[in-house]
Image (cartoon, rainbow, N blue to C red; front, side, top):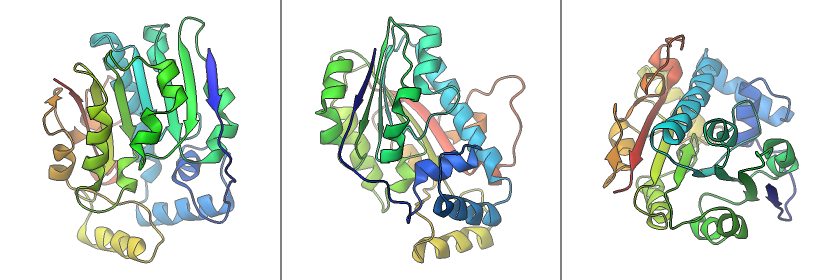
Length: 271
């Protein structure tokens, strides 16, 4: 069963949006000139970036499959889902357990227009989509989509993939993660991928910082210690917080320069 919860919002084609820029990097067509221009500027700064984006997508697949197969998770709250592509969270989870239930959240109204394509649930399971913002956890948790689709007395997989680095300033991302986790029961899991400058040469890191200061980047990279701090009080799954490509890699996965990967990832259980 599929549900789409609409909101009245217009699509702004004058400002790049992370979901549409990510779609551009993945080779999609659901983006505008402003998104492609922004994406191209990032690629000029960091050639090979698209491989890193693919690696981020791959670790999402591995983490969701791990939670469904090995930890028995049957409910997922995926915030910052982006535009539909191959192996979305519900497809990976329902391939393991057709009864899995998923709620997708994104703040780009263009994603809503594609929600029916994204929400192709199995008959046994259920998917829903709401247009909402990570910066307002209460609106997400109190939404009809969450209340009607998920049972918050049972474990939930909270998916925050490539979204927390759009929350600037020290401590701000952790506060939002805490608000979301506080609403979830023991046995729930948190999956995070997060952009970092830890692997970048100083000159490239400085160039990105200049982009951010001038309003041409919306990414607030965090160092490993800051990403690890997001998991405070949780039980980290092995191998802990590692570069995206090194979290439970599978045979045939490409080995990438960490400069291109430019991201930390971790999965942890709420005790």
